Image 1 (cartoon, protein in one colour):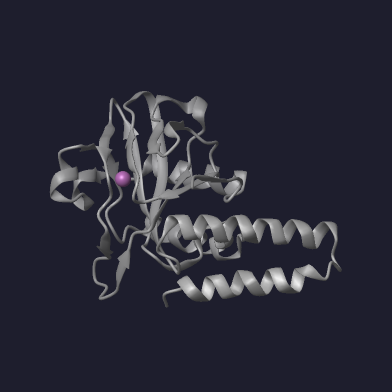
Image 2 (spheres, rainbow, N blue to C red; image 1 turned 90 degrees about the vertical axis):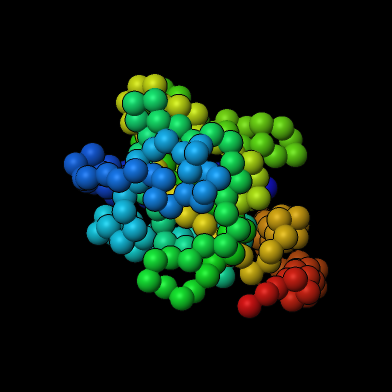
Length: 225
Ligand code: NI
C-alpha cells in the first residue's frame, strides 16, 4: 500500500529546515548504501548523527501522534531519519532497500518493513526527482508538496529520477511494523478506516463493539512485539 500523509510538517517548519539544509555541509550518499546499491546511488546525504538530522528526527516524533501514520504503519521501531539532497543530475537507480538496519552506535536492529519519504522541497523547486515505485498496480511516479510524506512498503523496487534543475531535499526513514506482512497491514488499515468512519457517522451503532473487537483479534493474530 502506498499512502500520502499530508501536512506532517507545517509550512514555517519546512521553510526553516530547508534554509538550514541549504547552508549545511553534505557528504556522499554512498556512506549508508549497501554494496549493491552503492553503485546505483548518486546523491548527497547528511552524515549520521548530524545535528540537523537529529533535529529532524526529534520533530518527526510527532508522527506518533499522526492517526494516519499510526493506523497504516502500526509502528514498532523507527530507524533514525536520513536526510538527503539530489541536485546536479543526482539520482538513485532502481533498488530494493536492505532488510535490516542498525544505526551507528546502537545495538538495536530494525527490520525495514516500511519506507517513508518526507519532502522538504516543493515540486516546482526542481525538475525530475520523482520517486518511482513499482507495485502490483504498475509504476507510480510521486512528487509531493514540502511537508508531506509518502509511506510505502520497503519491499518494493524503487528509484529516484535524476534532478536536472534545482535541488530536492527530503528526509527518509524506515519503520519496523508490529505487523510484518504488507497485505495484513493493508487489511487492518482498511478495517480501521471503516470503523473510524462508522463511529463518526453512526456513533452508537451496536456493531462498533464487535467490529473493534474483531480488529483487535486480527491484530493479535499477526502482531510481533
Ligand atoms: Ni531506497
